[in-house]
Image (cartoon, rainbow, N blue to C red; front, side):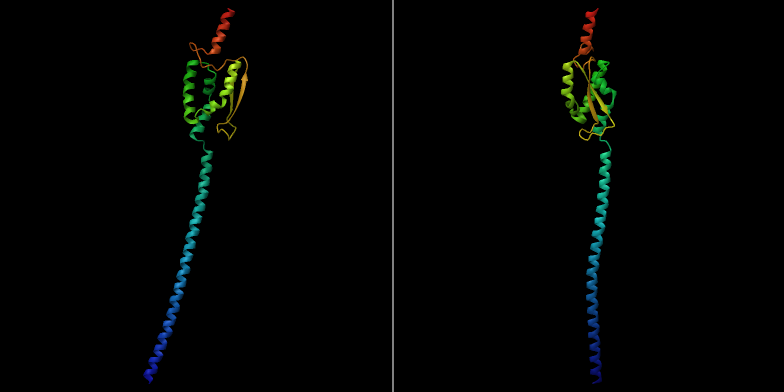
Length: 186
């Protein structure tokens, strides 16, 4: 019977160990689930931080892109602030001015589709009819958001030469008119 009693105790010890092992396995499974959730939470947090950093970087990049003038804006601004623009509108040397005007018109057509000239076309025609010069004053320090090429003020000057593109031997219409008036005075 002692042998039976020893075996019974051994079975009880095995049952206790089995129960203890089951508890350890259950605890390990719970810990595994908690660790998996913690790792997922950590990964999500890292991704959101990365996204936040990327979003911040994208915002900085877009602000920098806005502050850097585009090729079109640079070409339009260069044209408006150049003396060539004024020479094309009010030529001193007609042949040179025609070449420069064609060159800058091509630039405007490429980058601005001529919207600058269309903007002032009616004013220019009105001044032509009155025999006045149309002067476009450009303020490069102004930041007018509506047309992105600086502020421009149209002014008239009475008694100066017009904008005529029709030329006779390199002379504009107003040069021709002045020439015929001076011919009459002689």
